[in-house]
Length: 235
Image (tube, rainbow, N blue to C red; front, side, top):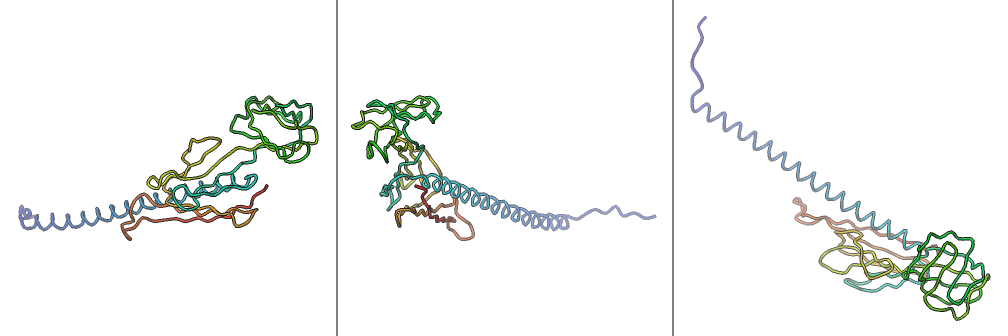
């Protein structure tokens, strides 16, 4: 049987290489586009998850706000809320000195409360007094300055801690959380704006907007995600 020993010509090879290059370029562009969409989708999920987690945390904390929160402006209008979070409550069991409060029904762990906690008498003997807690045992609080009127067994008290949500810089887009001091712990990044409001004595409104890290190639803009919640206070 006759067999041809003729191979491919140079032109045929060039055409084959050109076709293969076009196919390869198309496959690469499709892969690149798919990868970009995946990265963008992951960024959107990260942004939305972080924003939702931050919102849920603020809602849980603000539900336990005691008294009237203070809404102020740090970077943008009404972006800071300072409040006293209710930590514990009970009736004094009596036998107090001018610098102590006993509650034999409690089993506090040693040093549960520091100077960032406040005990307030809200009913009974000593109503209206508030003192910083300097130390505690399992059943006794020691206050940092003496009671004017020592509480007795009729005294209803609450323990609160000063907390806040705010941003400290318009450039870093970090929502921060303060508990009992001036140290601001990062709560969520990518937060471009947030506002607090108090439409009435029982509710607190929160609006929060998060922004993606990178520009969406389809729109030329960074995607944003806005959440709004109304907190019904328990106290």
